[in-house]
Length: 224
Image 1 (cartoon, rainbow, N blue to C red):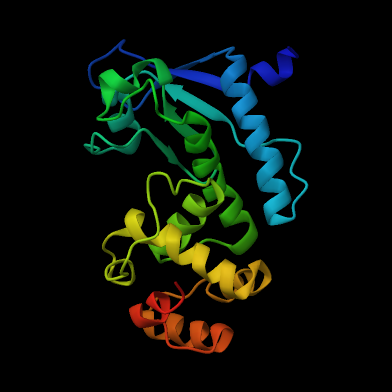
Image 2 (spheres, helix red, strand yellow; image 1 turned 60 degrees about the vertical axis):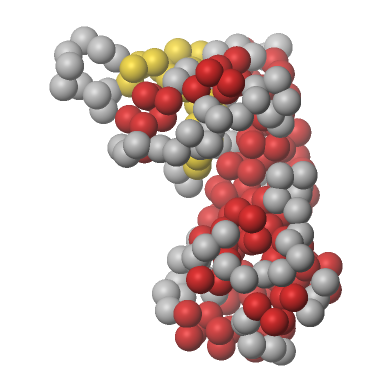
């Protein structure tokens, strides 16, 4: 494998020279052809979905070995289901070999390729639409694009994501229904227009302008 490509998958090690230096990390290359393949496949598919041609200086993938390191990087105690996150510039994932040990997931069946695509999608989202202040929008897009409906299927009833609840359980399905019923271009129009919006009233106004309806649970429930 090309050595330049090899350096894109990197392992983080906590640097323990001094007990107070818990924000200092040592980086070494992690030559893992499987993870590298997952990353390259995800980049190709995300470029196609978002209509981009991102080939050079692509986001790096950092592999961390344990929960303690994830907590230090996040600067908080993380839930045991957290096995990856995006910073908007690069992504971090838990070492697949340690998923069973360091999380509540079964590492033998966990779909790491979809995790990588999900986290990379957050970065593509920010580059394409400038981000969002509403978690259901960005998480919904990442779940949809990474095809994680085996974990978060379309619910029988939407009743939480607009209020900041059931984000993972409902948001991916909400984006899927919007794209299935209105098309990707219409959804992208909504995503562009919501950039910078901070209050729910303004988001409601944009939603109605684009989709012709109030942004409420009954609307999504009727899209089934």
